[in-house]
Image (cartoon, rainbow, N blue to C red):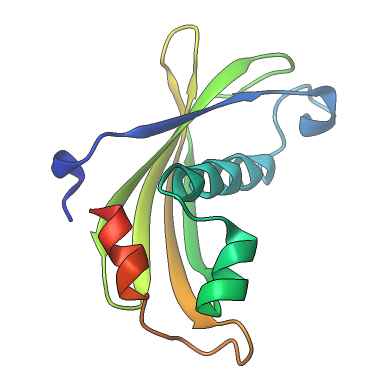
Length: 138
C-alpha cells in the first residue's frame, strides 16, 4: 500500500507540563509516546482494539525499530497534530511514517519512522498479520 493511496491520519495532542524537560521544551522521548497514541488511534479507527487483537486474533504489534529526526521544539501547552501513514505493508510488519506538527502553523517538529511487527501474543515470535486485519488497512 503506497502512502499516496491513503488519507493521512491525524491525532491531536496537547503538550502538558509533564511532557517538558528542564529547558521548558518537550522531552525527546515524549515524541515516541505521542506517535504511539496516534498509531493506536489509527488502528482503532480501522475497527481494531489492542485488547481485542490479543483476545480474538492472539496477536500484538510491537515496535522493532524507530528513528526520530527532531527539527523544532514543542513547548508547554502547544497544540500538536500527530500524523500516521503506512509507508510499507508486509506480511509480518508495517512501516509507518509519522510527523509531529504544531497545529497553529503546521510546522513539522519531529519526523518519525517506525516499524511494528505482528507477533504471537503467547510466544512473542513473529507471525503473519491476520487477513482480516490486512483487509481493514486497505
